[in-house]
Image 1 (cartoon, rainbow, N blue to C red):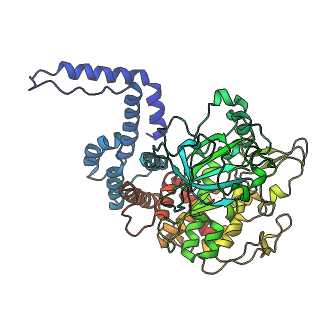
Image 2 (tube, one colour; image 1 turned 180 degrees about the vertical axis):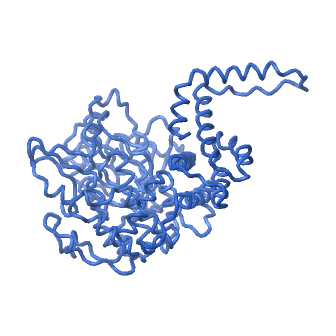
Image 3 (cartoon, one colour; image 1 turned 180 degrees about the horizontal axis):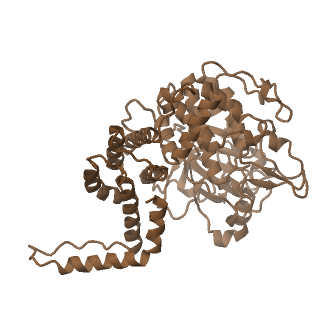
Length: 566
């Protein structure tokens, strides 16, 4: 019986299932003939949803284990099922992996193999959700400048915003902002100020939350929490059409978003006088209120990191894979960034300067996140905003022509931009932007692309060339591209050799995935404090792969490697 058929039968017979659950409880109560030494401790009664969910998971597990014919199958069924049903999937992965490796317990049908991948995805995603973040103050009912202390020097300033180091304010009566001034300390250390507050410059929107959020709503797409009443502040058409982006290791950690009055910060008159309101600078053009974004503080931009620490080939591979995972995650959430460049990617040197950093895509002010149109932008007029950096626009975006029935498809556009960044990651000039630009995105030909260095693995070179195809239909999907880059990093080397070699079987691929899942789940729950040979970016990359893995896509990625990189 396939998993799909089992699930259909389960839902069709839901009424009988619920009756059976209640009947079994009554029967077990009536059979209690022997006296007990004392009354049992009261147990919380599971809800009907929990009961049905547990039964559904039992059907999935039984369907998978029924295909494992090794002699340990009975032991698997007896010892693992209870742990799996209540949230601990690690023994299941480890023991099923042993059964697969033995050669006698073979799962043969693809739908049952995909069921194990479903269990892997579910367990890894639940494990990620359990990890708490101390910087995310979920318990605070309202957030404002009164909850924050700023560092003395800004981290960055652009034409539309300024970023300050910050931290949550302790309960200190002396640290007051009742006079409209932000409290500023003398230290600027990342350990003292682990937060970054991005203050948007507001020249046009009226000084009320509704107008500000209407004007800057796209900036809040990656936010974990928005501190405003959607019903009262925004009409439904504004919020209902905005896609939300779930947290991801390679997307900026944006904890809270709120509106407040522009504070009088020391040095502001010299840094951005025009953006200040008249109550601070009589000749300023800014409004009294603006949007504030509370984020994790990073160590700088990817561009600055590359200049100061030219990546080794291995680090370049890890950085490239992280960017592909970020684009795949945005694509799965129907969001196009539209301004991907090394300045808009942040780095976290969590393991030091000599180890690959964690990268996070930021600055979503130009993104396309519309639930009505998805990743297709109606392009009826040349005045429609195509996105950010014109030099790194994909050819289908740069060459689009407006018309009454025209639209721009952005589903492959961010992937193309990451393909151009691959040159920077592997020690070369970006051929489409910067001082070393030699190609124009509107007119270039694939054969004009500069040769990538031989230090790159052949599959990665082929992947970059495919990503930079002018025709978006010839590019791999972002998810497939991310899977290919992950296989190059972690898959057994014999899988990536010449096409004449035998491709790995589905059971071999599944055994490899199970071993990765067991390792990540066992070692990842220690908050990466004792990671052994793996660094944090490596663990996060593997986790990103496992959280979306499908057996069919892994096989498709292996097939792509064999056909395109030899």
